[in-house]
Length: 522
Picture: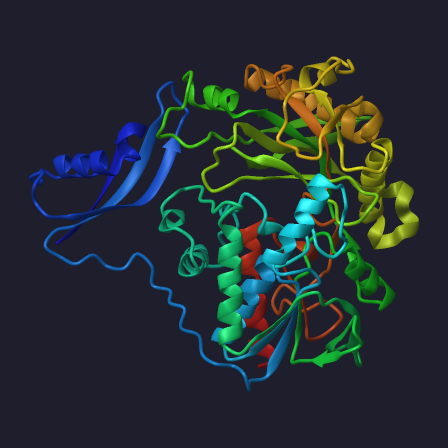
């Protein structure tokens, strides 16, 4: 017999396996000693009231063997001698595109400018400790893309883009915990993602696909508005039945190459700002309405949005990529830039919470950069990053200011302890940020302080520059075929092309592009 039920539980019961099992048996009037397989299949925290509750959907198998939690199996056909397709970029979009191509009987040739996950670690250590930025291997470039060394958030609102459950099961099949299938806001964690990404690579290689690290695309092979293949930095030419362009939001040279080769691209809205860092204990107390979250509740997160005006134009200000129990890291992709991002380990057990706090960039802001055409936003982004780096003497030390001081137009005499390893320097963020970012940011923070008491006090600090929220460029594609609007057999894909905003949406978009490529040309 199989039964399913919904429960509203105290955190102490919902997250304690023994107490959870007892609660389910009591609800169903099953004797405590009776054998039964009980498991949670959905779990979400409701902290809206004064008492935190956990909503749980559970399955109970009585005198019946439980069905497998996942149906997906790593049983890939061998495609060594199949027609081949090229994927540029080994981030979530590229990796999932490669796995889907294999399932559909096409050999993927995955090209990644950066290094494999293990070799990447040395370059990440160099940027943190020695302030040395490797333009080909950093927090953005390398196996798994920017997602590998991130919080690993797997929540998306893009439910129409693909099968969310399928993507989660593929992660589980490659080493992720089954908890990501249960939690309403699942995440993997930066400490576990590298192993999972490496397992995905092994699946590709064992099925006869190819993965090329330290390999950069420097030109496209085109004929009669049709993509035939690519030219690599070592002079090799690779051809295929199609090219999936999955380079991520920071591959500026690819955008420049598209412009040079008359492949139509366009400027796209994006946002810039700072990272805001609090003690996690403060966020916990604000969100859970209790002095401490205790041993059962996870590190609390938040999502904030405000509308402000600057010179008569409405500006959205919003939190982005919130990392509870996490760290702030240097995410520049070239020397002379200063970029910060956030990440969390699987346990989210750092004493710090951080989030992007960004302001929408609009057409008025891009007007002074008209000479750069579709790369206007990219140039604005680059100038903000370079300006901050120059002010810090060319290092990866980040400008910072206490939030209360920033809101009150005061320069901070001292700063708080931070998770940002290269270090902070007290700065007037009005000097660091462009005015159309700084002023709306100040107004937005004032609104957030009214919603969350203590959020904008000097118990928090802002750290710059958070500028890689999304790609400032879109590579347009047809809505039905997903091909580029002018170039056949070119499939713009994922976050870099402007069609995703995180690991899950990028993975689903990679699968969709692979399916369309095979449907049209396989």
